[in-house]
Length: 332
Image 1 (cartoon, one colour):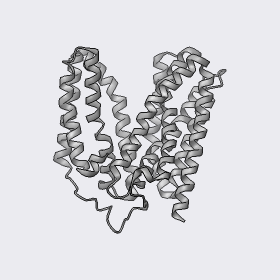
Image 2 (cartoon, rainbow, N blue to C red):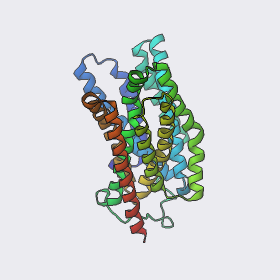
Image 3 (cartoon, rainbow, N blue to C red):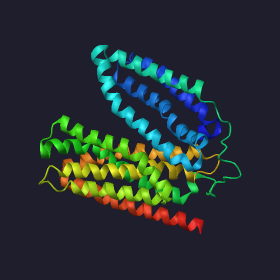
Image 4 (spheres, rainbow, N blue to C red):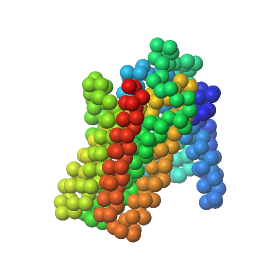
C-alpha cells in the first residue's frame, strides 16, 4: 500500500503481475514441502501487491460518481475468474499435467499485464483528486482514522460470515441434508448468477437514490447474519436455497460498497495504505473464518456454529452503525 502511494499504482501493478507470471514458471521446479511453503509465501507477497494498487487505480481512472460501479465491475471480473479458474485448471491438468498449469498460469499473467501496459496509459495525477474534489477526511494517517477502523470491523465480520460458504456450509450440505457435491455446486452457481445479473442494477439504484453507503454495508452484514441463523432450521432442505438468497444479497450489499467507502475515506496520497488495510481485513477473514467455524463444529456442532456466526453478524452490524454515526458527526 505504501509503495503504491510512493512509487505509483501503475508501476506496482506492472511489476506485481509480470513478476508473478515469471515466478509461477519456477514453482513447478520446487520439490520439497518446506520449499513449496517458502516459494508460495514469496510468490503471494508479490502477487498481492497488485490488489491495493488496483483499487487505487480506480480512484485515478473513474470519476467519483462512477467509482462504486467501477469497483463492482472489478468484483464481477474476480467472480468470473473464480468461476472459470478451477474448471480451466482441471482441463489443463487432465490434458497437459500439473506442469502445464504453471506455464499457462504464468503466461496468462504476463500476457494480461502486457496488454494493460500497451492499452492503458499511466496517469501521473488523477484529475478527480484536484482542488475541486478535496478529500472529505482530515486525518493525515490511516492509523488515526477512527471511523475507518470501526468500519473495518464490519468488513472483517462480513468476510468471516461469507467465507463460511466455501468452508463449513458445503460440509453441512452433505452431513445434514446428504447433498452431493454437484447439488452444492448448483447452489454456488445460483449465487454467482444472482450476482452477475443483479449486482450492477443494485449498485446503480443505490447510486441514483443516493443512499448512504455505510448503511448499505451494515444492512448487508445483517442479511448475512440472518442467512446463517436460517441454517438452524433443519427440517426442510429448501431452507438452503432461502439461506443462499439472503447470503447473496448480503454479499451484493456489503462488498462493492465497502470497497467504495474505504477508498472514499482516504486523503490524497494515502489511498494505497487505506486499500491495503481494507484488503488485509479480508485476508484476516480468510484465516479466521475456516479456523473458527471448523473448531466450533468439532467441539459443539453445526447449530452452535450457525448461532455464533449469526451473533457475530449482529456485532458487525452494530459496528457498521457506529461507523455511520462517527462519519455523520464528522460532517456536522
